Length: 149
Image (cartoon, rainbow, N blue to C red; front, top):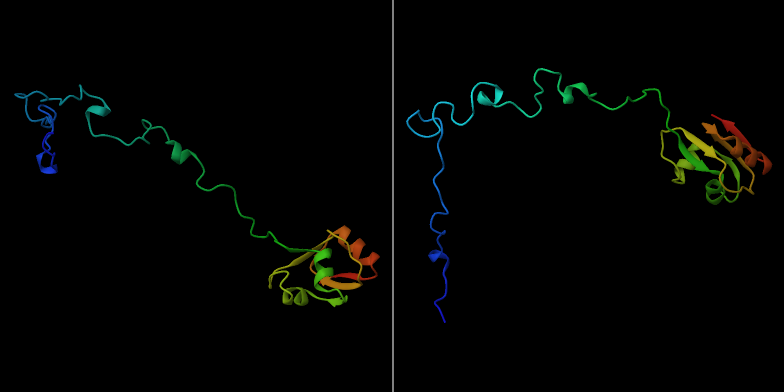
């Protein structure tokens, strides 16, 4: 069998490594004068970016910088369903937003809206920032009251 090849013995094939062709080094050598760039025109001069569109307003400047806008007056409600209130307060009674926050159902310092998803069988007197029509109907049908704060 032949000898084991070692890493320091590896060499590229004959003619595989050619020296880099240096252009623009005078007219005597190949690649002089225009250095393979032809005559005149942008590509013969300094290279320009891919975003350059020949003086036309570039695409990245024509498009809007930000998408849409943010309404500074938008009110985002923390929502809670009457079914969740019944689970949290099975004995019924008077409930304020602070009680709902204390149970961990909504975050503090944000307006609360009660929605009418689920069934309600206990009497709840709820004080919240907003109610849906179905929530008011279910609360009043169970004998409670819905008061907007």
